[in-house]
Image 1 (cartoon, helix red, strand yellow):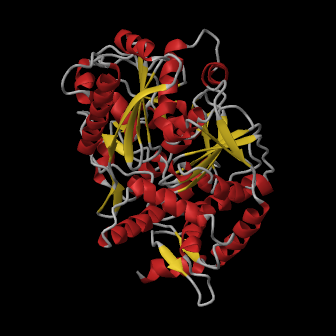
Image 2 (cartoon, helix red, strand yellow):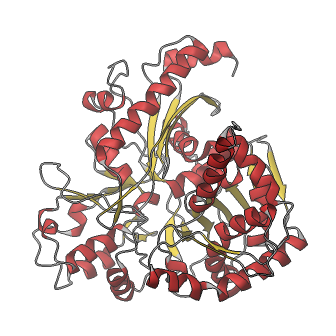
Image 3 (cartoon, one colour):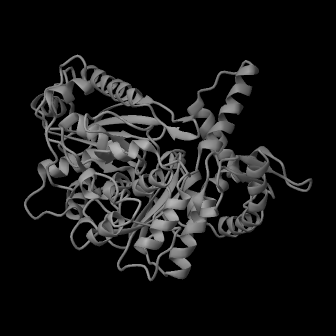
Length: 532
């Protein structure tokens, strides 16, 4: 779109707006009729660790949303000279899972518990056995049942159990709904009905510790919606929550709110069978759209869905770049202490590229990036750790490389099940997220870890905010009978520039050597948890 066309699209509301609540950033993206980004705005935020709980305060949600939208609105006015007053469609996305509960008055009755918490082991194990279905600790149903097992008094008052993005959507529209992909991280989905699994709902409600409560599970869960279905309109109160200046007009249609896994699939065109994507940032997860069900239940593998309900095997690691980011921050402090001013983004790029000069296995160094607990390796709490021997090649290049290797090592632990035990076949893996921001570096490391070619598109940096904007556009523009796969392939990704890197044989050998060292050294990490 040229500038004049963009101006007309903005003025006429022929746009779509997507907002994603990520772990460290809230980002808003406005796209035109051709689905390309026109403007964006963002706000940095961070989770808090309070009273043993990883959480965000709800007032920070609205502060961050308003700041992101204000910056986007300012950029629209500066670039196109047109005030942003409406859009054709709107969508919200966020971190999946977690536990956010409200009473009949709509008041929060317990601290929001994010996906990062590893406090529900007892509940997750019992529900996995009950359902014959893997229930990870971060799932909403695990948090609910753990609160019941703990005897927490707020449980009796629950009128609505939702996720962060479900809460935001409800406050903006009055609709208690979720997209099916996001809902699949709360409770198991039956892909035959594209709804919560009715048999497992009944099993849960029949539990002696559950049936004593005045609510029924289905009544307190959000209703499930498919991609393309309408999910309410922006109310006047909701418009003010986004834009306190009251320039944004109510009445905008919203698509179903989706999780970051679903928007990652959309943003990488990985919603068809035998496709997959890996999202690497604060956490790292791989999503593989399956041709058939897995042969059995694996606690390490989540079964979720695409935004249209297709079964997806998800390997999720709580920890990816947070510890690496902390080390880069330390180097940034050191540079400033020397009187050297360097932009943090430039420092990241320089240090990432330095890693390519290191030994393929990281020179015998070892790192664990566990800022929080990690279920895939049965580590209960976060203890970031760096270890070396006197014989290790302790260089800056190896130091950076080993932290990149560590960022994806736990992911590989889960992928071994899919590739080696279940023999899952994939035609392509697409990468997105901050890990891939520096060209080639993260892509090479990930290709070595996954042992398949990894593709990064030119839009990979736009991430989930762009993905939910595409879902909003799909709801608003798709033709009757036009599937999401067809819409993305024909209207969005045709001609999209991409770079594909095959695994380098030396990188593969080096990663395997590192993984052997990493696996042996897990006892060191467990000792750190016990001792500190």
